[in-house]
Image (cartoon, rainbow, N blue to C red; front, side, top):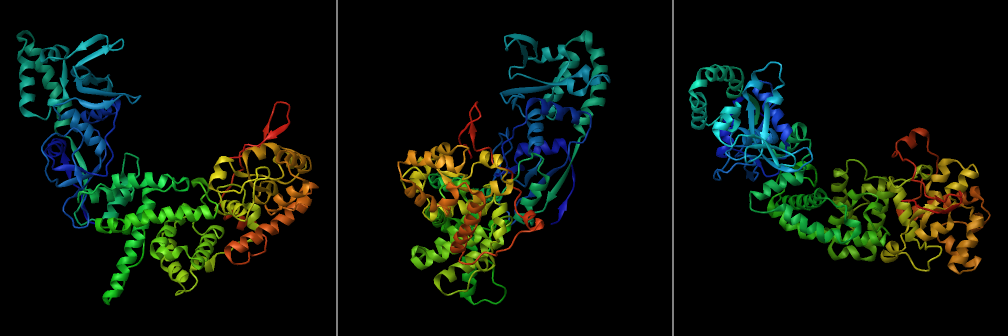
Length: 624
C-alpha cells in the first residue's frame, strides 16, 4: 500500500478545501467541534505547535469510488475532488471556517448549544510572554459583539474595522486572503495619524512573532495512492481516526453506492423499520444485513465460476469485511429483498423455538446464515424433513456454543454445507458434527450472558412448559402479556437460609420460565410453603399442579418435600435429555475441570430476584 508523506502549507490546504480539490468521503460524520476547542487549535498553530497529521486518499482508483462531499462551510461550486480527507476532518473544518471562510463559524458551547462565532486574536495579549495564548484568541457572536447578562449587555463591540483597530484585535478570517488582509493592515496603520508610529512597531512585532507562524505553518500529511484497496482504507481509518468514532463497512459501502446514485442508508432505514416490527429482530444491525447479502452474492459468484468451467481457483463464499466491501450495487439490489424476507422467516423460525425477543437470542450472528439458508432453500425450508434438520443445526450451534467470537468462516461454511444436507445431497455439516455439550456445563450456566443458558430457557418452553398459575400455553402473545422470564425454583432466600452452595443455586438447573405474577406468589419461601399458595391462586388440585410442574422437567415430589438434592439430581438428568433431543446427540457426561469452566463466559450473578418488604418477608421476584 504505497503512500507519500508531504508537508503542506496551511494556506495551500485551505485554498484546496475552498476550491473543492480536497473533499470528504460521504461516510465521514458531520463536523462538531465546540468553540473552546477551536480556539485552542488556533492558539497551537499561532505558536507553531504541531497539531497532528492529516490523511488523504487520491481519487480515481478503480476499486475505491466514494461519493464526495465538501467540508462543512465550503460554498464554492461542485467539482470532482482530487483528494479525499480520511483523517483530520475536525481540524481542517475548524481551520477553514475560522481562517478562510467569509461566514462565521457554526459551532457550539460546552453544553452543546449551537452558536456562530468570528475568531479574533488580541494583539497585545498574543505578544505578552506572560499571557496564555489561548486567552489571546477568542470568538464573538455573529454580530461581532461580546455580551453578558444573558446577551442583554454588550461588553465589547468589533462590528466595524475602526472598532477592531481601537481594541487592537485582529480578525483571523482575513489572514489568508491577500486583498482583505492588506486593506485591514493599511487602515490599521493609517486610520489614526497620531498612532501610526506606535501601531507600526506593534504590527511589525505581531507579524514577526505571531502571524508568521500562521503564514508559514506546514501540516504533515499521508497521501494514500489511488490503488489502495477499499478494505485497507477501512482498516487505516479505524487505526488513525482521531475523532474516536469507529467506521464500519456499512458507511464505506454507503459512500460507494452513493457514487452510483443509490442511498444505502435510506434503503436500510426502511428495511430496519420493517424488520423491527418483530421484537426478536430489533437488534439486527446494518452490518448483519450486509453480511447476509454478501454470503449470497459470493455464493452466486462461485456458482457462476463453476458453470463457466473456467480454470483456476474458484471464488470462495465469504462475508468478511473485504468481501462485503466488494459488493456491487447490482448484487445488493439483487439480494436485499430476498434477505429481508429471509430474516422475517428467521423470526418465525425462532418463535417456533420459543425465542420471542432480541435479548433472548442465543447468538444474533447465527441469524445471518439462517436467513440466507431460507433464501437458498426457498419454499422447501418449511418441509417437515427440512425443518427437522434446520432445528438440529440451530440447536447444535446454540448448545454447542459455536457462534461466539469471530464467526465469518462458520457462517460461510454453514451456508455451503447445511443447504445440501437439508436437501439430502450433502453430508452432515461441520457445525452439527463437531457440536458437543458437556454435562458439567450445566453447573456454570448461570445468567443470560450464556448462549446455552438462553437455549435451555427456550427449550423448557418449547417442550410444553406452562406457567404454574395461568392456564394458557406459552406463545408469542402470552409470553409478553404474562411477562414470562426465567426465575428460581428454589428461591435465593431459601437457598441462603439452607446453605445451598452458590453454584447450584444459580445454575440453570434451578431456574424455569414463569410469569412475573407467579414468581411474586412464590416469593422467597420453601417450595413446601409456596406450593399450596400456587394451588390456591391457580384453583387446581395438588395432582393437577404436579402435572403442570412436571412439564418443566421437575420432580414434583422432590419439590413438595423441599428436597433440593433430589430435585437437582432429577432435573440435571431431565435437562440433559432435553438437550440431547434438541441436538440429536448424547451429551458428554463428565465433570468440568476448573480450566474447562474458565473457558466459558465470565458470568456475574443475576440481579436479586426476590423483593423483600420492610418486615423482611420475601413477597415476590424481580429477576430481569
